[in-house]
Image 1 (cartoon, protein in one colour):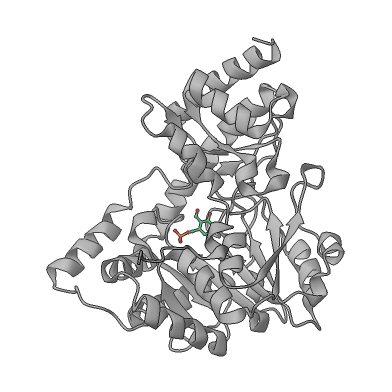
Image 2 (tube, rainbow, N blue to C red):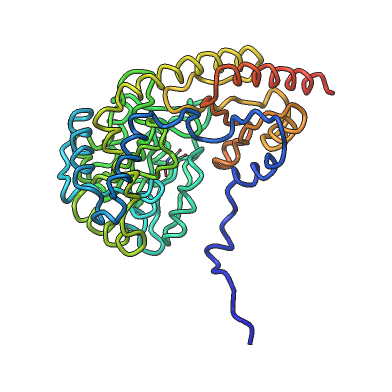
Length: 391
Ligand SMILES: Cc1ncc(COP(=O)(O)O)c(C=O)c1O
């Protein structure tokens, strides 16, 4: 008898990541300027790398505590207190994970029973809806639009019966739109949640890449700490994507449940990465500010050039993405991105990779050198003129 290699329905029914599908096209092409990937173009700052290397030299090559090095959890608690006035107990309310990706996965697996409804504002990071589905929950898509600046509002949430949902995945600054929120906007959302059972998974991985004003952490709002699982990590602000370190902070029962899953499936986050992350929090602040200044310069360049060529877009408030409209070219997102790649060798991501309401937009990552960005803008300008001219 043949082995039964049947794949589960929940996996076969899941669409492949739109980004992956598109980047299969990029593979094998030469001289492509890629503005597609969501990761810093900087190397991890040297002092952080050195600490990782030194930990290996010292023989720190075994598992750590399931929850992560206590030294790192204490450093995370200090960071949250100093930056956001948040108090979390490093022993019981913080868990170190394999990136924010694992923290998200653990949170939905710990919190959702079959059929629980989770609000997922779109356009959004590609993993949210699939992770909710894999955990047995039902993603309820909340579409935002350009007319309202791709901003989530209480009225949009009310229209999707937010008060009866089990959870909401919030992300700001947002991948892919660069949208962030000021305190008054967050307070308006918080008011809607008071008196409900709703839990907020707040993905604030771009916290430190906020260009307009100060980032306000969701659990720092009155009454929100007890209903928020705060997620953050080292991948973006410290240019540490490959080290795979993130964390969750939240109510102790939820962190204990997440730790239970984590100890069976992962054991502990990468040890070298944890030592490096300690150094990042201890002395990496100036590196973050330096990288942020450079992203801010590039943001100005890309925003001005795109608007000048008629691809309208708002100035991103955070992260390193910009989300221009390509409607004026008459092409759909996939055709625009495919033709731009084939004809001008510039890779961007079709907006539809981030949800249906991303149709008519593309995501450009400006985590690329100013020189690359200038050249890419020249090529995109040439391409859009040609398309509008009908050739
Ligand atoms: C909004 C958002 N959340 C989470 C992640 C995953 O980050 P990590 O490398 O910490 O798993 C990304 C990566 O692109 C992201 O954009």
